[in-house]
Image 1 (cartoon, helix red, strand yellow):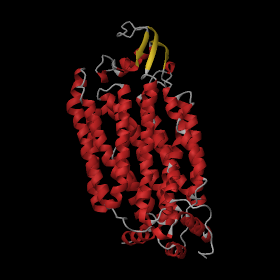
Image 2 (tube, rainbow, N blue to C red):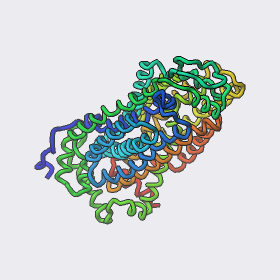
Image 3 (cartoon, one colour):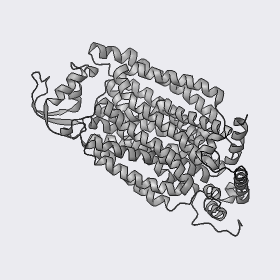
Amino acid sequence: MISGTPASGKHRGIFAVAAVATLGSLLFGYDTGVISGALPYMYMPGSAGGLALNPVEEGLIGGILLIGAAFGAILGGMMSDRWGRRHNITILAVVFLIGALGTTFAPNVFVMYPFRFILGFAVGGASATVPVYLAETAPKRIRGSIVAVDQLMIVTGQLLAFTMNAIINAAHGGPQITVEANHNVDPHGIAAGQHTWDSILALQASKGGPLSDAQFHVFINNLVIDSGNGAAWRWMLVLCSIPAIALWVGIRLMPESARWYLVKGRIRDAIGSLKRVRRPEKDGPLEAELSEMIAVRRHEAAEQQRGRFKEVWATPWLRKLLLMGIFLAIVNQTTGVNTVMYYAPKVLEYAGMNTSASITAQVANGVMSVAGSALGLWLILKFRRRQLLIFDIFGAGVALLGIAATFQFTIAPHIADGTTPPTWAPFLILGLMAVFMLIVQSTNGTVVWTMLGEMFPSRYRGVMNGTAIFFMWTVNAIITFTFPSMMSGFGGGLTYTIYGVLNLIIGVVLLRIMPETSGRSLEEIEGYMEHIYSK
């Protein structure tokens, strides 16, 4: 049958498949990262082109996307199991485009919310589908590196977002407003004319100014603002429509997952698809790989497994494996990595850096993320998954405690005294953030996304991976929503201490319970997991 079945189309090198599929991950990265530079402009008054956000609305802008991502992950996993990995990615490209255009042209924050949810659905669907597609398509010899490319593309998307934010911000000369009149008895030096938004924000007590948050909002409401450049955030958001179109075009030229075909009983289609992405001289005999895939499929059929969540939960070893996957997905977020990805400019402003500088400085975090993910492609070939993740959690905990100490002992005393923190303080925070991002992106993201793509049985891979990522995005949403209020209420010292200590505790737990998947085929991993979780 193998020799008599032709390839289902033109040969596609696995790196070409990965390059196209991970455009979904590039969009994932861009859409989650772009908000960090857009938020300072969104905070500006509506008459200046902003959305006049407050901390709660800021949290909702980020959190609603992640709630959408949670539902996108679990439903996207089910959709990919039913209709195919490639087909699902094609649909998600359209959803990305709708979400991007909807958020760009939203006239106010209330219209923004539903489109952020739609965009989040696409992000979550991509996060559940692309790693599975890559894991099922890549040969065993390079599967870890190919799936790690997915993580590299996520952070490349974030770096692209940070870079475009910085370019757009520079082109606009930083956030500015033009005041027509000021009806305050005490105008605090804000006369009619053009002002930088930083000079307005400097009046807040949290920046060493004389006004409490309530007084500051009253002051802003009494300003008659003629114009401003707050609409710059719209240019930042609209750019992600370009890779969405490229993804829709490119993925239609790629093959479907051979393992998905096999699960559906379409053996000839599986052979044709596998022939499109395999070179026997490098990847070994096609017969051996197909025989292993069929043997696992027959084992599943003998047990009358149908791939639904209720069968997963009713089977003790699958339930334990799912809980382990959920824990790993949560660990990916409790590092606090997205407090840096989404809010680093705001954190740096708390530390004393001006808005334009903080938006530009975020590019450094993006560069370190990409460098870390590129390093992760090498590390995951040289070290075991378990070693890398445990190192990451302890290293991240120490870096976060360093940020906490800088806030508590260097910055907080100046804020309390109404004075300006030393000029080197925000740069120290930025340096610690950069080290943190290098550690996390070279280990945590690479390992967790790789393991989630490979640790579940093929029959249940979509629904189990989607469920784990649902919890990942749910925790991400909680962290994203609460972080601005934590920084405002607790300050940087206590906020980052909480995250640092949490990571050290999680590191101890991982030492006891984390499994290992390195050096095994997907079918061997399935047998190994059944063995250890059936005890």
